[in-house]
Length: 292
Image 1 (cartoon, rainbow, N blue to C red):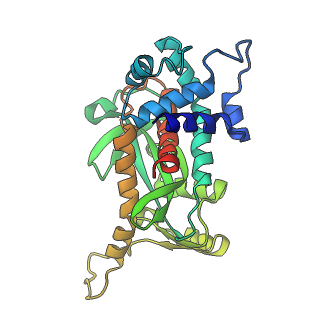
Image 2 (cartoon, helix red, strand yellow):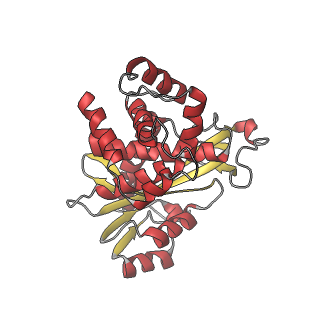
């Protein structure tokens, strides 16, 4: 257990990627605090690994069990304030660790989205957290209205194992899935040489043609069945796509179980929501790197 903690701390300290260094850079006189940013990130991710879901629980655990390792632990208020400031660093770690995990035995991918809810049901009408970015939308899968944002992800599928995160983006809740997927594809090209499984929200002939031409990717979506169509024997395209997309549903369920990122009701600002999501993605990438 101690070896894993040391390995995590050393991995963070030795990260020389410019994205991470920019996320931890300080433009103030207090640019070398006694409790370093690397220690803070280590403490937070380690607390998540112990299945502690709140900052308060992680802080109390560190104070009770790891104080000998981190004697300069600040007050709880400073602990929370500095975590919010390190949101770009967690985002960078998620990207770096996701890029480090490659797989040569498969070229199958999936894309989907899930809600991050700051308020639900009747409370979604008067919610104002993150106003200007967060908005209200209906979630058909849960059959409920919610206020918040939406997380869009591309994952690489692995037979018999959880998928690997390839790219992620946060958008307003009302942003169409297809629009967000096109933007991710345009910005970072997360998939290439294989097949991309998606649901009906991603059906778009132009995008499918572009993926095939530029990325050598076959976009596979369920066929839109007309009301008067008859389901013929042997026509199992919908079931094949649903089966191939099941791992990304398991990915969202597992990630939410481990980090509770879909419940943003405790967030009091847009920065708090961003921290909740990006720290969860960094934690998921951390688990994939050290445990799975």
